[in-house]
Image (cartoon, rainbow, N blue to C red; front, side, top):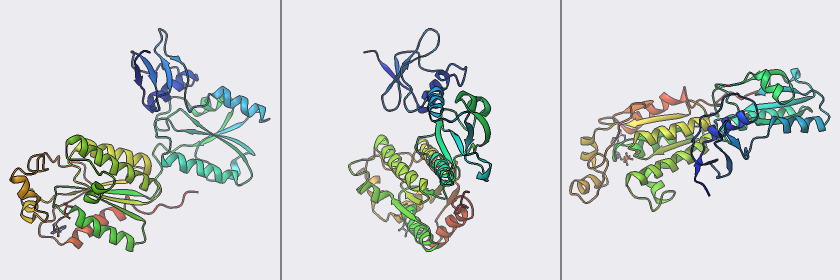
Length: 351
Ligand code: ADP
């Protein structure tokens, strides 16, 4: 068996576009070995004149869709691209709903909220066929009319939002040195959000390490795994409209950036709020609430953040707080004021 290169979902979608005749552009792909998708399904292999495709998992070809609709007696179907129109009276009795979803994880909020909106159209008595298509909403390579035509339909209209839909949920992600005040402020913020009637889940750094990340240590790889796990759980909460408050140290910028990206894909832009609890090392060490700094200085704890392991201070924090000389309540209010009026405002119900 020859070696396989793994393609990203974005690359698989590009192969699908090319293979389905939706785009003339030959995708740029690894030139060695066969290609598999993220689930390990064999997609194809490089050929002398463009890719040789074996299977395009999860995407239905335009021909298959057109044939299915013809068999159902839909003469020349009418297609609508993206979210349904605000006024569904514009829609005919039968609609082919084409959802451009390439490049987004299969379960992002945009896709599920759009599919739910089409399900509500079905409830008005119309026949709706929902077909996800391997085209990106932000930078479509094909015009919507050509896209509809490829699926044997004529275009009635489109309503495409290049941004992921906001769910009203979000993630408040605290980062900072040990003893900076992350847990203390996060706990107070959670209380205040609960008082405001929001659904909140606290993923505290120390608690996560006892449960979700039990067994992980403090090597860079283990720290990264810990933060990624917290980020994944938080993104799921935000996707369903909840607020996750996380308080790990999260010393590395690259992993924080990955978590931001994952959360925004699930909950929409603005759904991730980074709070840097920027209490200086000297103050954290003077507090030394858990006696950890003394041990780290004595060499009893290897790779201790701020002493013998780096802390990459964020340059992209939405909120930065130095807790020195402030009380906890004031700090918690600073965080809430920054987010409640903006990113984590409850969303208006979508039509
Ligand atoms: P971390 O979660 O960042 O490791 P903790 O919240 O566990 O930090 O500990 C922070 C310590 O600093 C607590 O003992 C807390 O009482 C104290 N502290 C003093 N002032 C503040 C403040 N303004 N905000 C948060 N904590 C503060």
